[in-house]
Amino acid sequence: MPLHDSMGSMIHLTLGRIELDWGKNSGFSDHSALFRPDDLTTIPYYYAGDSDDLECAHLPLIQRREDFSYRLITEMKEGYSAPLKVVARRLLLLGHTDAYCRQEFQWHAEDGYLHHDFTFDELKAILATADFSDAHLSPEKGSESLAEFLLTHVFPKYGPEAPQRLQISWPDGGEVDGLSAYTVIRLLADNPTAQELPITWQFVDVADGGWAPRAAFDAPLRQSSRFLIVTEGSSDVHILKHGLQLLYPDLADFFDFVDMKENYPFSGTGNLYNFVRGLISIKVQNNIVVIFDNDNEGVFNWERCARLRTPANMRIVKLPDLERFQSFRTVGPSGEHLGDINGKAAAIECYLDTGSEPQVRWTSYDQRRDSYQGAIVGKEGLQKAFLAQKSVDQTYDYSGLTAILAMLISECVFIAEAEAKALLDTERIDQIAGEGPETIEE
Image 1 (tube, one colour):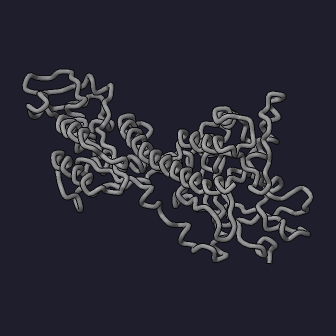
Image 2 (spheres, rainbow, N blue to C red; image 1 turned 90 degrees about the horizontal axis):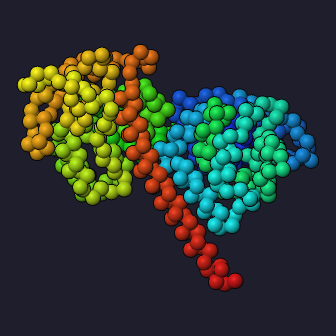
Image 3 (tube, rainbow, N blue to C red; image 1 turned 60 degrees about the vertical axis):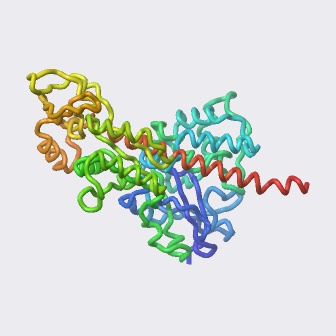
């Protein structure tokens, strides 16, 4: 039996050859939300062999001292792997934003847990500009902690101005105090030398050792991490869902859509307003984003919803105004004119590639907003042309759709960040409350 099997089963989360998190047997963090099902692949696992010290053999590589003698063994096994730039985007929808990272760091600073002299902004600048091109894992190098990597590869380049007092604390694996694994990933999101580095989760030893069921590592995102998107009609659902699959495939599994044909209890924008009121009244627990069209009827009901007392887990928006909609070809009783269709006729089909001469036809007058309602000519053909795409078409104009999806993602990040920061505050309050009696007894 290999030495690494004799002392327990290890599980690792790594960035290239930098160890971000590790666990043993049943004591580990669940990082499955960082990855999509398609990220399951064959990845290298690294072990120490031929060591005279069995205790050394089962430890994570970053915890071994130079006085231990070992040979690095590489085995290819099942695991998750995705580029840092993809994982960093997924972390935003999990609420781990830069603002969350700052709050987490400051919490540790206020409690006196930091063993280094740099501020959050200084550390952010270091991680955004440092050269991480040497962080690729290779059999001859093995793994190391972030603290070791900074001390060996980053800080020496600063010369006498290098940050001081960064210490490697062997009991906790050499992490940089105040940083969780997810904060490290987020702070490296804009570093061009780190974006393509693989984030890997080496879980199979724990599964094979019987410490967790194998199926647990294939589980979809928990419902609490997903977002329910509610729109005016089924065409909006089809277009948004297909747009996510084409343009943001790494994030598409975060979103669920109300099925307008099968399960939606209402139809039309007026009833969508009533649906929103119903969701609020029952205190729905799902994270929800309601999207109204940017036409006359949609804006009227969006404005009505804006006056409701919505819970923190709900956002109500309309499709965004676009500059190109300010001078759009329109036709009505008085003939053809260039007009602003923002808030009057900009249904979701207008955000697709509409060709060189799109036209909106005014249909009816709405006294409530003293404005005409309109619809783009040939909207069914625009829908079909887009939904028929199997992959990104370099000749297609996705700018309008990208504006919608960027807004949608931003609203979801807003919800997730608020939830994550509230949980962090609760954890800190609980910790302070737990420390209180000990302080009094002392």
